[in-house]
Length: 136
Image (cartoon, helix red, strand yellow):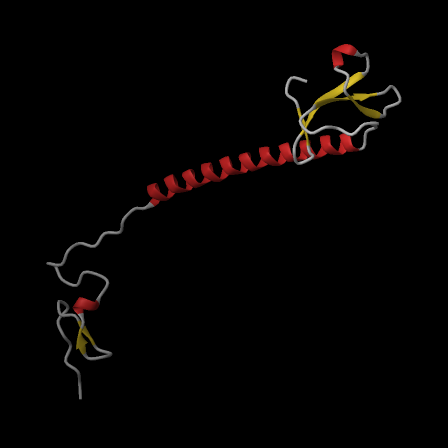
């Protein structure tokens, strides 16, 4: 039995023997609406640019916070390894100096009142960590 060829304008699926024009992902007749692909390049580029700026800003924020934490750690290590013969009081400001031999010591004496090499002034927080005092 020979199959009769359908005209070109008729959409007939020969595999399942059905008319399936409505199931096609493309236009099948002259009267069908035009299917055009949307150009999303501009949207993608804008989105990529926004995401890159957001991630870069977050990275710089985390980097600054990390550097601040490392500085705090180094100052705390330096102070706890320095010499002092008193128990520091929470909420007070102390001054860290370096001797000529290179050793460091913590003192109550302000930098204006002595001739030692001043490393910095530090405030003892409630959580027993040392915070560098600005301007010192």
